[in-house]
Image (cartoon, rainbow, N blue to C red; front, side, top):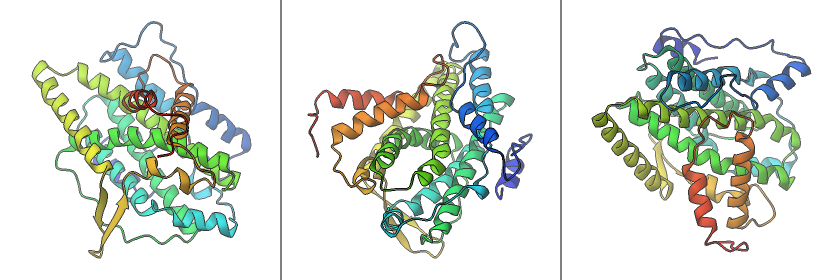
Length: 327
């Protein structure tokens, strides 16, 4: 991959994972698909957050559930004109490609600061997978001739911990809603099943990413001294405030030529009607997001912590929301 050199240079000791032959057989692909969704530790007893056992097992989960698919050989099916227009018109591709690139850099930058080898390698692998997501999206927009704005250069973060927290919590928010939207798109029948199947590994990979992040937060938090803990909690609160403000505003970015572009940061909440011909109520979408969130996490060891903020907020909101609420 194009970014492998950068990661190896930034993170000493990181070795990019070996990928299977470009034309792997169906049995290999099926085994990888199953292996990335199912994992249980063979360690008895609780995985106490902050313990060496907790750190070792969360990192082992991430390594052993790695899916060795190659973006270069993913099949991009020929789309009917209506389906192609729906894909091309989605207002997400510029920011999606750029976001994956920033996530790779931010995660790699933070991984480089970690002394613990297991954790450093897990976060480096996470960064590598973000780079692979960018390649998947780049190949898709090329296959369907989707025009993108020229991409501005990535900027190395001044505060690598802040950048990593923003990226991690942002993925927890976006993935929760993306799980539901992806299922809406699958059920709608507006997109070929082959296209849904092509993106499925990426969706499950996002589940692994936020599972690792949730457990990293718990592990990191316990290891801090009391005064470091106060500082960390204030930073986390500031990150959530920043993300809340970001979700109610339009993202303004400059491309490589200095032109301003505006993007909807909240497409994962507002985009149900863009991927389905049928009207979807807020109650229905939120319920589906909860169901898909639970389904995607169900195969992983229950002793590992899950991201809880978005599921808890949505479950609370559903108490006050009528089932036919379409606002």
